[in-house]
Image (cartoon, rainbow over all chains, first blue to last red; front, side):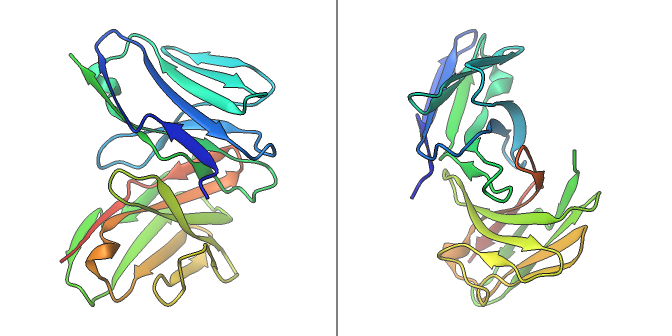
Length: 113
Length: 113
């Protein structure tokens, strides 16, 4: 059972455009929602994260929008650059899950110059 | 943050053989996790390895196939035993001292021929 659902599976965006990746979860006990970025041949690295007490968090060109009632959150990449081309994973965790993270299925982002 | 070194970074193995993947962390950590990432798919948790106790395996993964050692607080190994082509995947080591901090090694890309 996939605890975190992610879409789309792949995304192609023109340079300068906005990339949007969506995730949904079911377990209301989750209280930490990170996004990870993975380049080929590398392990995932934390990009940005949010807690459910805020609706938005912005770090540079990256923004997480969080809708607690809908149990959905999304990553927005503004002014997308070719260097942003990577696989992005959303995740969820909880203080009740023994430090275990539940990952979405991943989105392969390609930014075309 | 924790720095995780994984070895080997890649390997091509004959079916029926075994491969041991090493994970070294630059600090002492209680909880280590092993994931499998199949091409274009999400991170699937294989097992949780805590120092001083037996590893806890997720559904679909068994100790005979994926034995894990955790001899101290900075090191762990995962063995993929009696390999078949279906075991071809990326294997990732991760540490998470809290439910808000998960760090990954660069992964081991395994190809079974």
